[in-house]
Structures are given as structure tokens and as C-alpha cells.
Length: 319
Length: 319
Image 1 (tube, rainbow over the protein chains, first blue to last red):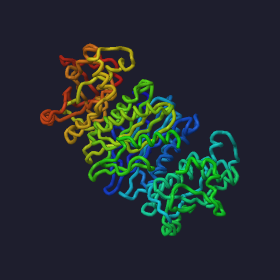
Image 2: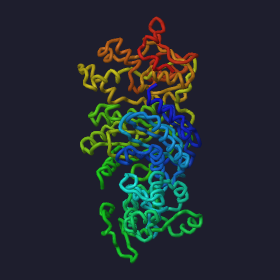
Image 3: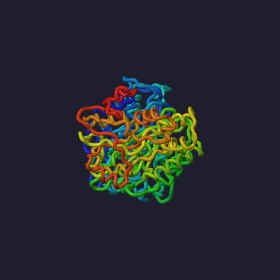
Image 4: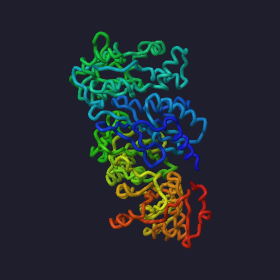
């Protein structure tokens, strides 16, 4: 039995690989088998993380295990899907038991938090690279796409933005900060919490949604383009954390919130009449703007002045 | 728009990315959406190919496009699944338009031959590496697994074995051969034909199945282990091609058929009473042995003598 076959057995024995709802057949055969309930559709998303490109190499394998699955699961949240399962394609330069054990532990923790089961994958030798494919189920016709935003809808996000971008100089060892600042930022970077419950709560209510991975402006540009509408963002309403403001200052924090990536917070559009019930139910919803006729993304300052052209790199994002 | 986003758009416009049966939402949103008919299950398999490990680097991108999808689709054949869709996670060191165009052309050709639609994926920068995840549907409870072989069943394969292993010295440029020999071998290596129709024909008939990727002996060991049964193979019955015999001689051809990998031909077990109808329907089925009480794989020569221990590397494959 080769060492890569041993790794397959190692993952097959992981807690997150044990069966569960919707998994008819897990690891060990030519295919896994999923049951999709009648009247539901299967949502599928694939994400690749390359060492040295998407994460520092070397990095803590436990944290990588958490992050690699969270990033993929966030796409299920963005569709309003209920998590079912995932596959892991793991390419490794060498087989190190400690590394694998720690990676699997982080993966397993996030899998349990998300309600995802490992049902298959592949293990190969090469430069460190991970491809995770996640599966969820969603009532037919109720998935949250990017294309339904309508003029008059509110533009909302599910939490504070910019923390992961703010964490980057800490992750790369370029800066240090006291724990009160560094810990919340690093936690957000390494263990983003996919907003799966919020995504499901938005089914039948939000008119469009996505998870912010490329930065707020870029991702709002995606909604605007897909929905053939304009989005107006009021800069003052964009939520940022105290830790981020302390670390980067007001202007730096705003920049991170607008253009930094890796937030994995939901952005969505919502008819105004849906808002009160969702807020009353305690969902963390911040209204940051509105949908208008037109196209692209417009950014307003506190006075209502259009500061779009002044935001560096904005042109790049303009639909 | 970055060059990797351009690639995503390039694949989104590929013929194989255009909608079709079962695909409710394709490339371009956070997730793709698949419809799974009532009473059916979704079959899923993931395969990674790493440059320099699973294929020579550089290699012909058109041929790689064909082969990368065929290898993955063969797992759907092994489960008796009807192909639906696939995702492509493509990691590239550099963006070269010619390479991408040729790769997409090969991919598209195999996708059309298999009835698979490209519904999503990821495109990243790094060492050349491809992870394909394929999706098929199969009536609930009718998937062909590895675990149902029963004593008394016939052991069968769906075609000649060893051609891909025989092609390897040609692929690597270590040997040459006249076209009558090299062409069929190289075709088998670069464009394996997943036995999707045969797999579907075996639903409700075969008691176990897989596709031969690790070599006949190793893969029969997988069936034996999963089914808690023994498999007896009669060496004389193992089909090999004339081209392979010409190229490697009788003994070399047998060795390639027994231990060479990458055949992507189905191996399966079948109650004897199912055989006549399948043969009458014209399916390419070769009976090569039988299932017995016990465990592991036993190899018999023409006289019925057990030559298992004499086959090099056999211990590696036992159970």
C-alpha cells in the first residue's frame, strides 16, 4: 500500500468522513452517492488554494484546514444552500504525518461547524495545492443568485468588512500588533465563519446575494452586472471593526472594507419590506446602500457626494 | 479584469459549458445548480492530474484535455451512472492562449462524447495541476459498487487490457514503433473511452464493478476486499490487443495487462445467468475468471496451476 493510499485511508477514517443525512455512499468506491430530496436542487462550488499564492508557505496546517473549507462553504451560504458534503483534492510535496494530522483536525472542526461531510477526493504528489468542492441542497427555484437585484431594493451586508485584508500584514509577518487588535483580525482571516444560517434565512427574501471574496466594490460590481442594475453604497454605512480602525486608522480601515478581499461576509439586496422581520429575528444585517436604475457601483460620502473616482483602483471594478 | 478572470470567461463560453438536461444554473454564480430527478441519486468523483507525475510536462494540451476528463468520467461508468456535468479546477503557471485553446478543444470533444457539461470550477496560478469533479445520476439503490461480488459470479472485463501501460514508453519517448503498433496504443493512452454505456447496461445485473486504473490485479484486489470474497483470474482469458503483443511480446503484454494502470476498462462480477443476454446485445464482455469463497486474488495459468506468487509485485496487491 503506497503512502498516498495510506493518506486516503487516513481521511476516510476522519470524523467528518462518517456518514450522515444525504450521504448514501461515502469514501472508498469509484464515486460517492448523494441523496437530493424531492423538490430540491444540488448547489455545487469548487475552490482551489495554491501555496504561496492563496496562503503563505509554510503555514499552520490546522489553520489551513479550517480556512480551506470555510472559503468553499461560503459559496453555499451565498446561494442560501443547506450544506451536505464536500470532496478534497489534496496535492502534497511530501507526506508528513504531523502536517496531515493537524490539517485534518482543522478541516474536521470547520466541517462540523458547517454541517459538511467529506465524501471523497484524491491525494496526489506535487506542489502544495488544495481543491475543495462543496455540495448543498436548496429548494428548487429558491437559490440566491447574483442576478435578481431590482431598483428600490436595499443593499446589505452580513457583518463587518475588511478584517481579513487588515490581517494580511500580520499573517505575512510584515507588522505586529497587540493581541486585542491582532487576535480578532487573525481569527477572521484564518477561520472565516461562512454565513450559512443567514443565507438560508434570506431564501425567498433577498433578490440577489454573494459572498464577498474579491472586496466589497468588486463583488457589488458582480451583482450590478448580473442584475443589470446600479448599486449605490454610502461609505459611512459600511461596517468596520474597532480592531481594524485601531490598526489601520479610519481611512485605511475604509479602504480595506471597500477593496480588501477574503471577507466571506454575505452581500445581498433586499426589498425594504423584508428588513424589519429579519432584524427582529436578530440577523446581523447592515444596510449600506440601495439598488438604482443604471449600472455599476457608485460610492457616496457622508454628504452624499459621489467619491467613486477618488477611490483607488475603483475603475478596475467598474462593471 | 485579471487574466485569470479572462480564462474563466473563456471556459464559460466553451461549447461544453452551454446548459442542458439537469443543469439548472451553470458557470458564473457562487454555485452551479443541478436537478436530480426524483428517485435518482447523484454520483460524484474527483480526480487530480499533476504535471510531471500523471502526465509528461510539457505535453500536448489537446490530448491532455481529452484524457483529463476521460479519466474522471470513467468513475461514472464504474458506478453505472448517467453523466450530467463536471467542474474543472485548473492551476496554471502562465497564461498562454494557444495552450488554453487547445486544452479546451480536447476537453470539449471528450465532454461531448461523454454527455458532460462544464458547470463551474476555479482557475488559479501555480504549478500545472488539474482537478476534475464529475457528476452523474443513477436510480436510487442501483449504483454499481465494489462490494457486492458473490461466490459463483463470473469475473469479467469490458475490453483489452494493458494498452495504456504499453503506450507509456512511447509517450515518454523511450521507444518508438511503427504506426500500426504505436497508434492504437497511444490512442488508448491519450483518449481512453469511458465505458459509460456498458456501465449503465450493467445496472441491476452486475454485482460489483470498478474501472481499472491501478492495474487488473490491484483493482480486482479492491473488489475482493470490499466484497469479502476471493477472485480467481485465468491468465489465458485476459484479453490483450495484437498491437500490444507485437510491441511487448506475449509475456510483456500479459504483464502490462495484469499490472499496468490507466486502462479505464470496466471490471465487474456478474451472475452467470445474466451473461447470455448481455452478449446477445453486443456488449464487449470478456469472462476472465470467477468469484469464490475466501479472499484476495488468485491467478491461474492455462493448466490451472496457481502462478500467483510468480507474478512480480503481486504481494503488493494482495487484499
